[in-house]
Image 1 (cartoon, rainbow, N blue to C red):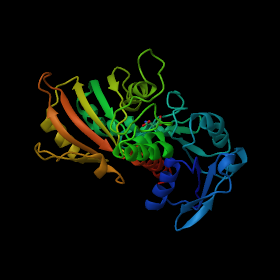
Image 2: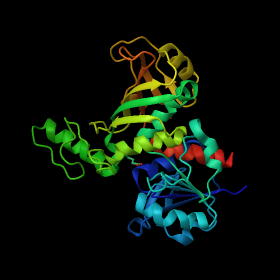
Image 3: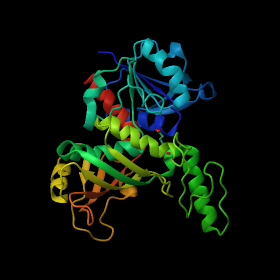
Image 4: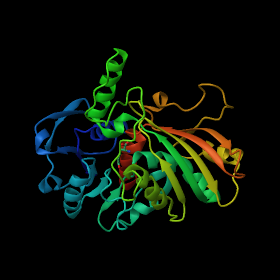
Length: 334
Ligand code: 11C
């Protein structure tokens, strides 16, 4: 059976990861089209041992496409996703453009794949990376004891901001090591040797857009508008893989022992189950290039009975973006 896949934004860091993921997982595509802005047309990207030539992402490029994986930014998605859907493609969109739309399901396959069935606009939204890894870990705990309140601090890698940000972190690190003041054009200052809060302001005073995404997306994916989410999002000098310190309270008390039992068999989770010891915890360098959400440091809270603390790490480009989108596509064609 024919299955034509388009990757929109194929030159970006997530677009390339989508191609790698399709290839690695032997996605049954009979044709893969790589689309991007006119600026990149004619350039080539590697795929299945050869190269694919970038075509301009415009309406006609979606003729005959079954699945369109978008990672070209919210403005391009707003313009092009409805055009792709009107031509019969199912759009899986990695931008923030459609996530809050009640007619677009927001899907993490391990948690709420059923939601993808109801897609009146033909568009399925892929959540933000920091939300995806958190709900993969919290989903099974929510199903067992219903989450009441989540306090999360993130430690987000530079690659969440794209190629140029990764390069800038490496340059800044070299400058710092050479005793120079790091130069910044992508980040609002030095990320090397430093921490930054570099997201746009959100729609509420004093909150960043990234923080508010975590609030709204968590509620939508877990299907519970009453979950309290209190995020602080932080950019750290790590190239790839986001980490998160999570404090979770439930409607019925949950113990760390019960949570570990639930997480041991949870889809997409790799549980770090050893007792605490220095260095024996999920780390971004180990998570990078892997599919799993690493969960460790599962602890009973010391002050709030029945609450837990967890440390969650995942490759933000893979499970946080490309892999999640490809897993949705796999289930649609599977
Ligand atoms: C970051 N989480 O690390 C962002 C990148 O809404 O998909 C992804 C933004 C999004 O900066």
